[in-house]
Length: 141
Image 1 (tube, rainbow, N blue to C red):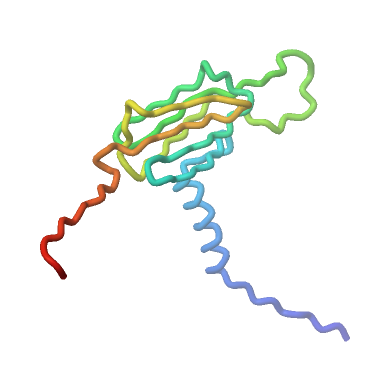
Image 2 (image 1 turned 90 degrees about the horizontal axis):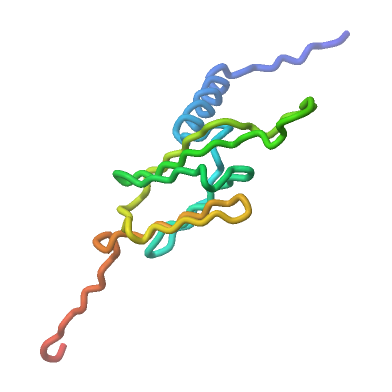
């Protein structure tokens, strides 16, 4: 006689997985259309690389206000005629905002676009940089 194996499911584990997936996408501020970003922090700056293949660099809008960097752009379909057989690249308007970990020196912000990658170099404001304090010693210890 065939004996059926019982599998006990934990309904709370399933609910936790759904909740974690939901909050992860909400917290990251990233949708399928938003560009992926790689970040690197140095002692004096933050370097961000946004993946923006197929985006006209003249149509990219980059703003910094209140410790937040905002990126707005549009990804268009490069195929304008014929019947589309398959579409895997998303297109349309998108916005991505990142709250920065420090105040930025607005005069030193640099951005460049090469081969579909937007690189943004954000230098810390002088008041945000650590200042080494020199200790003056008098007499022998």
